[in-house]
Image 1 (cartoon, rainbow, N blue to C red):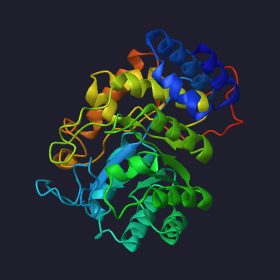
Image 2 (image 1 turned 120 degrees about the vertical axis):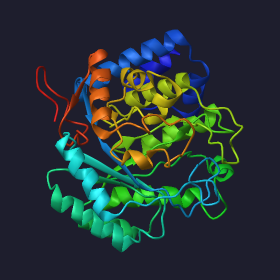
Image 3 (image 1 turned 60 degrees about the vertical axis):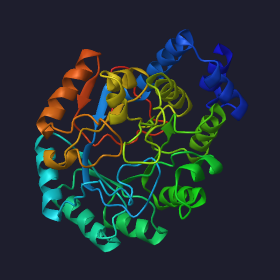
Image 4 (image 1 turned 45 degrees about the horizontal axis):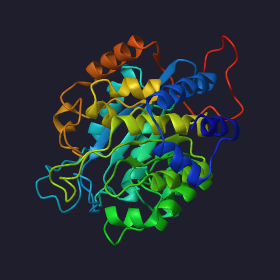
Length: 357
């Protein structure tokens, strides 16, 4: 297994069989060694900096019916909400005052938020905060829509592919959704010029080490700027409510592998990690992550964006989230920084004593 780590660190990839073998053969000692190497590699590009993104979950209406998701259209128990343009801009103003320089507008695929309305929203946010990066995460769209949003000022786009294996994808999604279209969206976004983020669930029902190997090879081919992974956590109003959750241990191991494979990638320690373990986000940073996404949504709607059960920070105010995160990162020797936190680029390692961007 150490030999495979050596190869991954040296060449930036493995074969599918080798990735699967590494995942199957992991143990505590191997994980410690992986995390050590991942930390060294991350510090070469980003030092001890942890980038923060202000997450605004602006609608929990969704036309899709994904089997794992609590805001799926057929969930009649979901308490639906939709933030107005003014409410979203108010979240951005509060976040800006707290030091956020990236805003992430995330929501279900809400038919009310037409492409034109989202475009107007992008223009409004960028006009109010031209020094900030704006990330969208609103699902699958035609290329012309992605282009219009990019032209309006959107900088980044997050679209988790969830699983790169086509059969596994179909087992988790309704028939009208296809893995081919999901991947087409990611390639379109990359071609347009977005900083692109993809990612996958860890421990989703039916997942095998071979599926995870396919995910890693898909990342290698796409070379995204951001990768968001998190454990599958069942939601009580979905068809997968009785399935076991993904594990912290495997999620952390995969974070380390991704850092070795894509050393300059922006890699979040997700809210889902913090949900399954009290120190999940800190452990994620120590495994190779370098991004956290505190919630700027109004406190009264946070628990309604229930993608999965027991989500953390649903009652916190934005300032509480920021202070809490700074203290948590400082406790493990990292620092939350105030700037856009752009992807640094493969040939831009930081020099000794130089501050990252």
